[in-house]
Image: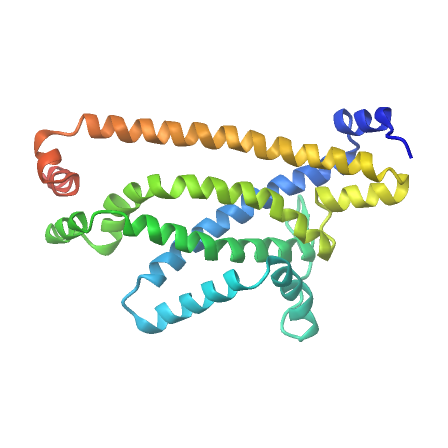
Length: 260
């Protein structure tokens, strides 16, 4: 069967409403799952570093399970396994202006929980990269744990977390294809439906591949801009630091100034 170029160009530049809906759902799932995964990953990282042994063991077990099992298995288990075991069944949720189907909820939950396990290790490594001396200086000034994290540790850890965070979102854009197995009509499942109706498999999969390539390319550009902007801000902050801050540490002198 010859390649149908008019059909290819039509779906590439004038996609149907179903195709646009699948594309939008892919982006929304990626953004929401990455956001939730990062927030949950932050709490998991703090739990991983906690002095409470039970909490530390629970978080370690969670990370071990989520990183050691395939994401596809987790998606099917959360949506089908929990319902089959009589534990929990996802129901459609109506928000008035929109309805969130149960399979979308399950897919979003699985993507978020899986991402949180990876972000926990990334954030933990970023926190560990901050000079321990700054932490001790902040504690000597009477800072609480929350103030220490918010003012000293997390802002400095962010420059180590942002690059791998961007890479994780790039992967998330592609991992959303896996929720198609539970019937979520994202970009891949929409393409599969169209191929069943038109039998133009090569053309449509070429289109969907270019769509994903476009999404990841756009995000790559955005990520590069974010990293450049953050690096520039960090360099400027270091350039304007006073002599005392450079000599004895920003945490000590910055906190002393704020108290004064």
